[in-house]
Structures are given as structure tokens and as C-alpha cells.
Image (cartoon, rainbow, N blue to C red; front, top):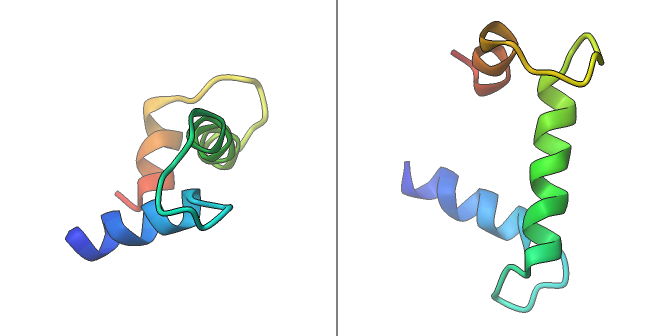
Length: 55
């Protein structure tokens, strides 16, 4: 679990500053939302959410 969190943090830290800015955090969140919204209707269903999480 910790390795996954560390990897996610590293992925969000696009400028490699060791900190995640609000802009970096929001950009990563939008990318995750877009990936989960498989039918591209601007909404994420519980099923899309679970599929994106691998559940």
C-alpha cells in the first residue's frame, strides 16, 4: 500500500520538487477522473469508479 501511495505522489510531482502543488494535485485528479469516465459523459458511475481502481 505504501509503495502505491509513494508512486502516486511521485507521478503527481511533475516538477520533481518533492512537493505536490495544488495545480499538480488538480491535474492528476482530472486525469484520474477522465480515465474513470469511460463513456465520456462527464460523470463517473460506481461501476466506472470501481473498474478504474481495479476492483
